[in-house]
Length: 324
Image 1 (tube, rainbow, N blue to C red):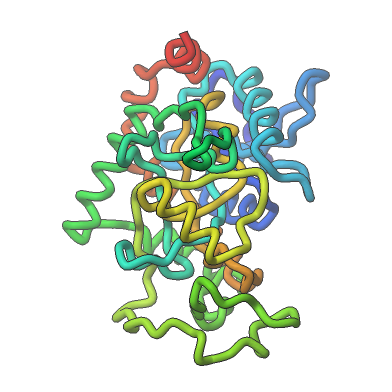
Image 2 (image 1 turned 45 degrees about the vertical axis):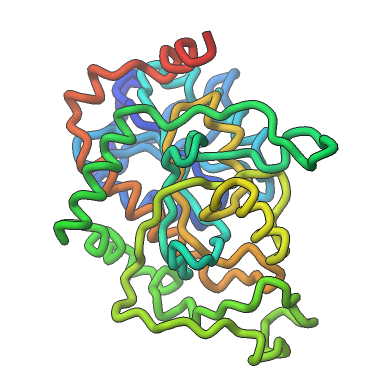
């Protein structure tokens, strides 16, 4: 059956991802897919279009092999220009988790940006200036829009009442072998000061440097809320990871695109944890983590009434209000 083609102004939600594996997970969350729009001379992006619940969603992935804050800004700006009725966005994908004595972050868990300790939910940890007392961050990134923070509050309440549908959304991916939990392998955390030995895997890494943690009673991912650290380079050092986290009052994960979006595209950042932002990185958990993040994004949209979206300011109006 031929897919429908909707008008630009019918799309109210933007979904941005950085990697093809994140795009695949996002597409699987659509309840219905729509025909792609014709290209125009001002926008070279290729969109995946569809419906989640009663929301019409435009999904865009950064060009293959290109990542980072600046590119995310350019893509989101083009999306806003094309879909003038867009209210808000979701930045959905994978990130490196920060283990701590606080939130018990494991591979496959989900981290959601939320204002915490004076920060808006996302900090650009590598943007600032060096002072006699050390590095000081400059500038401030906007918080997610109120309609999305309201949805987060509702989801947190649903989770406490054991009424979350996250498991059902994740289950949609089980027909794709790469995205199932069993394909990811063991969840191993090494001491932050212990660097990876030579080789593509951790087979040569010392087992006595592994951190012993209590086993969870379930394989279902947990969801954590707080500060996400964004930068223009991949975090690959456990000691630096822990130091930066401490400087900003407890960062939950590291990633590379969100800081570019917060002041140019009102959005919520959702990250599935695929590694521990240290030198022991590998790609085994990327697909499952991309899936858990996409599943949470679908859960967010499921609790937002379409009537509330229609009453909300457009993304352009929000940006003008916050920058004025």
